[in-house]
Length: 272
Ligand SMILES: Cc1ncc(COP(=O)(O)O)c(C=O)c1O
Image (tube, helix red, strand yellow):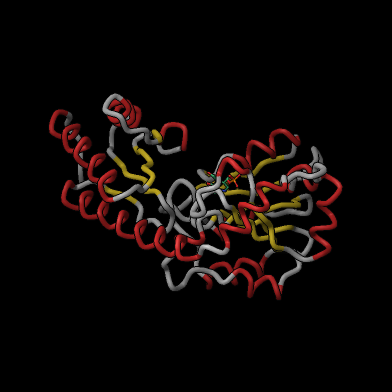
């Protein structure tokens, strides 16, 4: 809706790279100019992104924690960035994974929203709430922003069943807390394994971990696929030597780790 409402062939949009691919995908559909600013150590280069904004820029996309690296933007970084963005530019802050975040210096976007009219926060029921197939999420923004997007909203775009599911899910915060704790334990399980196996990774605030095998990630993907585990090859994510693994239960994580150990025992991997 944001791309449809605010991007045209006369405008420009700014985003990180690699990041969640839908920002670029929708920018291409609208025919606008797309500025992709490379990540630095898995994090948004906010200085580079601010410098890329010009008079034609209408939308800037921030993904925190970023998919696929899991790296987040701090409160201090976001505050400084917002101060640099002209008021005609809408900053889209995609917080799809925010319920998993444990970092104490993660941004308080609702506080920033009080200060900035040109911010919209996106959240979803697809991740920690586990309701991806209901296609329900929400945006938090000032009335003027929402009114500007309203003309491109499809009628009844979130069906009543999905709304009921979302409301019920919101009432079950124990489930959210349990998932958050289990996710953190799973991340630590993977960190420990990677440290012992000499594999590098980005510390993640999401429900996934990007691990660098320093060889074609497609091979690792294929090896795991043949043994019953579907992960994401980094090839399509802009990290060709990596794979992205979604954190599961302790047993599922261990199952993947055991298969990776097998893979490492039969394949040479340059570690550091
Ligand atoms: C950063 C990010 N935003 C949004 C989404 C999609 O959310 P939804 O299912 O609500 O469209 C994803 C899903 O992979 C994501 O990684």
